Length: 231
Image 1 (cartoon, rainbow, N blue to C red):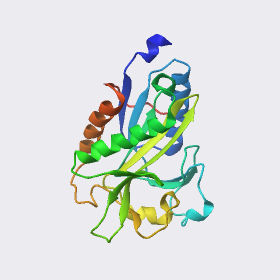
Image 2 (image 1 turned 30 degrees about the vertical axis):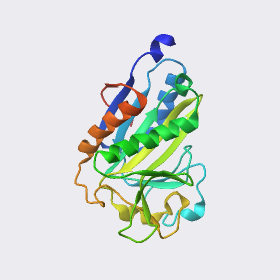
Image 3 (image 1 turned 120 degrees about the vertical axis):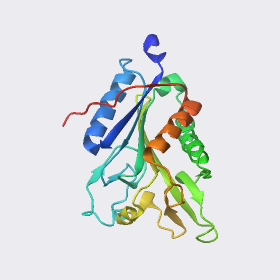
């Protein structure tokens, strides 16, 4: 057990679009292996095809267009969100037993990861105590307007995390109209992306920055090949 936890956290990036059910199955299996001391921690970067997911706090009334894209109920925290091409999803499987068993500190670390990534593109990302995720002020839209640029939804099992974050890079923001994102319906709170903010950055560019920011917040990484998933 001690020997395993001394290994660096692994970092894997998948090409193409990864089906959601297979991703969840992989995460659950890997989290169990980490808890058992049979596998090192892993951060898995990927994109999904267009879909909606509902977390443990999801309100059925917030699924406005249930037939628009596939809908997946999931065990992560939070409400409804959208995943799709142009969005960098990061699934974070860390052993919090080895990191202090502090769930709040872990979530703040995820926020800091995103905030540092955005700063590299001269975008100011901010926390909001009453609203989960990372937000960007939009004075160009009006006083008090803010847009969410990254969602956070995690689950802990035996103090191993899984699920994680979703950062909008060049996401089709119109796809969020099929839900009430994270249950927030006030007009002054919307969604944005790096592209929407005028930042011309590819998923590959953003992923490279995210790797450095993650290592800065959580520790050194080892690059590995992308997971092989069962059909």
